[in-house]
Length: 208
View (spheres, rainbow, N blue to C red):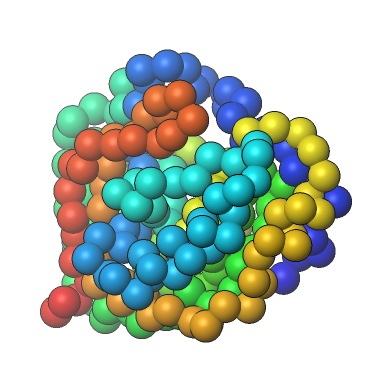
């Protein structure tokens, strides 16, 4: 676990190329109907609810970003279809994965739930990255070669000390199971202080 930050910073700066209305294609693990994972996120948010400077993520937009592909307007429909087929082919050789949301991580920009075992989903991400590399010409694979799986529960929207956030949180909550049986391709855009998306595809792992 990384050292706790001394200060919170604003998550909502504009990343290169991102602008209102412009969508990114992203592969997400979504908790959807997994009640225990959603309940853990809600309990964390309940502890943060009285604090200023945080945007709590609504339940329907909880997600685990697995791989940012690239901007939707730079990827052709044929490339997206080939990528999705490539992910499906690679996922067929994998089995669904059971992990736990087992600890709270605090980044200067976000409050997150990490997984145990921490590397259990590496094969899932590798399969996605291989499919992207083989089918998409303009992609963002080089931007984040390493991955620490997490599900964010809140984003910081201001600069300030982290101590109030740290005091409010239980950094070692009771674990909640997360069953990863599929990954979703979404077209995501930033709307104010929220990430919203349109679902494009759901690709199962093995015999889910």
